[in-house]
Image (cartoon, rainbow, N blue to C red; front, side, top):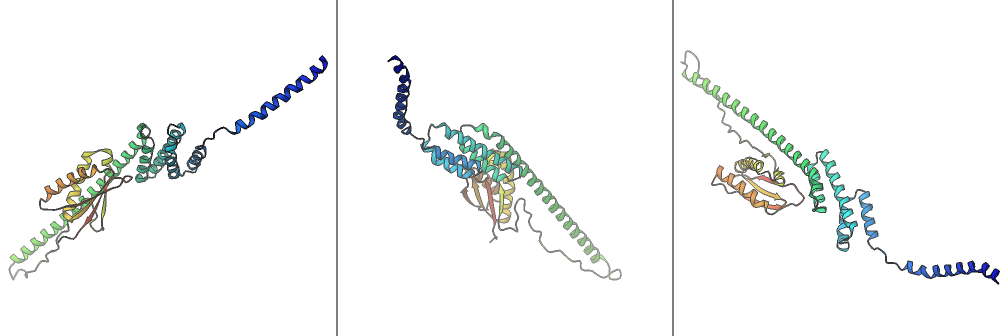
Length: 286
């Protein structure tokens, strides 16, 4: 009897164990599933494919359902890093507008971590300053060339006037009176910042983003001169509504100093992802 029990006792134990596992299997199948797994997988696929806009839209859709989920912040950080890399690449290629837009996207994704975007922000500001300095140097060279041209014309007129006076003072026996040609064409006004031949000219205002008011005032001095000289309509395009009255007041003050009777025509537009700028459109003077 003892021999029988010793032989069949292990078999009975194994049978009981298999029965217990069989009964526990349905419980595992009924575990709740994570319905965000597929959504986050789509975000990861978009990131891997470099489709940053699609990934951002997918995260915005997921966000209301994933409050407090650490994966949401993880993918937002990855997307912000991808936008920063895109901005760096655009900056290296000289595309400042694309770099600025990428920086704006990165900031919106990680507003609680401004230090992440500080490096790209500083690089863009430095590039904008260099671009503005180059434009100012080009305008200075153009102004010098125009001044030299005006001086050459003045010298030509002076020589013609002297020749005419000498011919008039000469006696008939000495020399016949020669009528010197007189240049009657009025000198065209010089533009300081716009292209008068174009339908409109764009003047970039990156210093608004950098809060560089000294450079902004200097630039608006030139803008005001062209507005008065060429009777320009002015469209002020800014990121924030509060920037419009600030730019408008600075520009109006300079226009009134140049010509108190001039009535400027100003309009505004909000362009959140665009570098602030002015659109100057010359009009025929009535």
